[in-house]
Amino acid sequence: MLYLHSLEEAEDIFKALSAPMRLRIMELINRQELSMNDLAQMLGLTNSAISLHVSKLESAGLVAIRTASGKRGQMKIVQPVYSRLIVDMIPQTTPRHCYQDDISVGHYTACDPHPTCGIATAATIIGELDDPRVFSYPDRFRAGILWMGYGSITYNLPNRLNAGQTLKEIQISFEISSECPETNEDYPSDIYFEINHVPLGRWVSPGDYGARKGILSPFWWPEPLNQYGLLKTLIINSDGTFIDGTHRISKTKIEDLHIDYNSAVDFTFSVPKDTPNCGGLTLFGEDFGDYKQNIRVKMYYDV
Image (cartoon, rainbow, N blue to C red):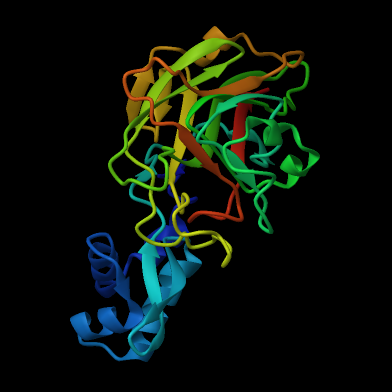
C-alpha cells in the first residue's frame, strides 16, 4: 500500500497515471506477469513507446522492472509495486511533523526463533539453516532477510521526540510473508504485533511466495527459499490500529501506548506456536524481495 497524506504529495503519482495508456498498463500487469514485449504486442505500441510509458511509471515508484530468462534471451518483466493507493483528500490545517528512520532486519534487540529458520546477508547465508543459534552471531547486523517457523522478534524503535512534543501516529512499513518449508503461495500465518507489550492486533499473511525470483534477491539466492513478500503498513493513531490504512485490526489507540520523549519503544512481531494458523514469518530488507527498503518507521507528532 502507498499512503499519501495530501494531494500535493500525490502530484507525481497523478501525473504518471494521467495518460490512459499508462492506466491500461497498470491494469494489465496487475492481472498477470508481463514483459515489455508482451505489453507492446497487447497494446499495439512500439517497444520505444512502451519503454517511455513504463519509464514514467517507474519514476513515480509505481512499477519495478526485473530481468528474467526468456525463449530468446533476457526479457524485462514489469511488475506493480503497490496493490493499493490511498490519498488523503482533505487538506491538513496544520503541518504534520514527522521523524523517520529505517531499521535493518538484523538490528533486533531480542528474538526467539524456531525452525524452519534462518538469516542471511546479501552475500551469504549466516551459519546453518534451521539453527536458532545463528540469530546471535555478529554477522546478523548485516542481515537482509530472516525467517522462522514460529517465535518472535523485537526491534527497539528510535524515539526522537523532544520534551513538549506529543506523539500522534506511528507508521511501520515492512515487506513480510509466511514461512513454509520451501515455498507455498497458500500458507496462511497469524502474525501478531505489539509495542511495549501492548497488543496491537493480528494480520494473516496469505502465503510464502516463491513462484518467481524476488526483484532484488541476490543471484545466488536458492530458488526453494522465500523469494518476496507483501509490503504492509501498520498504522497506530487515535482511531485504532490499522493495516494499510483501511483494515482495522484492533481498537488499540496511540494514547494506549503512553509514549513520551522518555519512553523506550519496543516493537515485536510474533507467531505463537498455538495460534490457529501457525505459518511462521519472513522479513525482507532492502537487499531481498521486491521492495528496496528496510523496516521503515514514521512517528508523527504535534508541538
